[in-house]
Length: 311
Image (cartoon, rainbow, N blue to C red; front, side, top):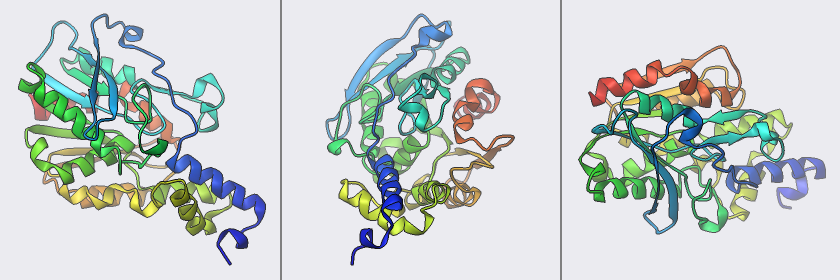
């Protein structure tokens, strides 16, 4: 008898829905804003290949008041884009959370603080190309995009000479950890990383499953994810690669996040191989998506971190 045959039909439907969300997002979030929405008139549309050839789309936003010699490479979570998330538009996005996330606000804060920003869409997200049958690996495929972005910078006649930092968020953070583990030589010249809301899918999907009344069926969820061409939840975690993150790293988590656990964020931090590291807990909300908006509204810690390590 299979796991499916032992689960009531209504609960199996929930398990399948959650598995599909975990590894094969049912929609893309469009690039719904540009730097112009935050009063920035100068930026450039850019595109470059991932390490496996997947075409990636992004922006290069020079520092306001004149291009500087400091560059932040910025990516994003699943199922978002470089501009954020459109939950405020209604379905299908509001089924995840009925909130707007505005990453362009973060870009504008950095640009006004004297940083150039290269922000890009991960594969199967935003305006970037499709790959891997549309499967999201929560980093397990997307590390190749981090390599592609760094290769683009390294080959660029101007960007390659800049002081570098990383702003790697959630899925993009998980991906960056694996990229650092697989190709540490490519990132030896990066000064630091800001790493908000990296997450293990066992923690996140376990919370989702419990909230939906199917917490006892995680094995069945893993099986469904594998059927879709994805990974099991235990395979999608920054814990596998955190020890190889050697650069100064600033992890940020929502302390009372209903969608994950404090223990997961703390374990990621504890496993980091960096000698210099910091963990900041966002308090006063249990809504994970409030964490994604935090630095757009409260940029002080973000800017202080980059200033400290990038001059």
